[in-house]
Length: 256
Image (cartoon, rainbow, N blue to C red):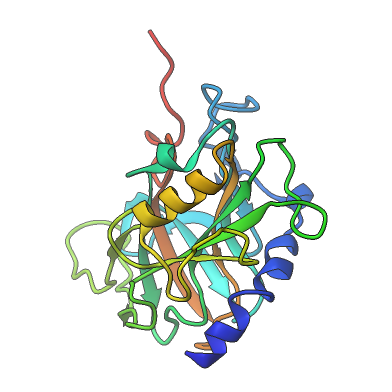
């Protein structure tokens, strides 16, 4: 616990900025985009972009299911991100969630995985933290209270047809009542200390202090993880109005 608290404030900012946005990849399977080739969707933001070793693949136990696979070395950032347009925190209510499964011995630890929300505090469209600006990051951890542990398992390979399913999947709603949220930099007045507030309390604090705030980007990230190298799977990753995990939910349908 002490190790995570040490990393959770000052050390999180360099991690956030270490991912090279210019090298991000649009999630694909076998080189074919699931999304239409256009810059954004319905004006709400960008498509999902991959970070690091993250890759879109098939569920090892169900080839009809599209999932995100992360091969973690225990330290290098990997996951998925999405840029947003003119979205405030309240608009993410019930729209910030995902499923997860860890292949033993890999598990959740050290703050991985977590949602990271880059907050433009004054609504100027830029992300500049102190001393150059008022902006900050919000970190939402899984399985609150933090350090409760995450189940691990081993998948049973299946190319199709009935077979045992041994990979354990769990669902995480980051906007529920769990006390999972943490702020980087201590710039939100009245923000409770670690493990922080739940979603509604956090949303109220940020909105009161920064009524013009915008969520510029959301990341689902694995980085520092003392459980060491390993594999994790993520499915049905929802950020605002877009869900990564199936062909049909890749991008909202247009009006007929």
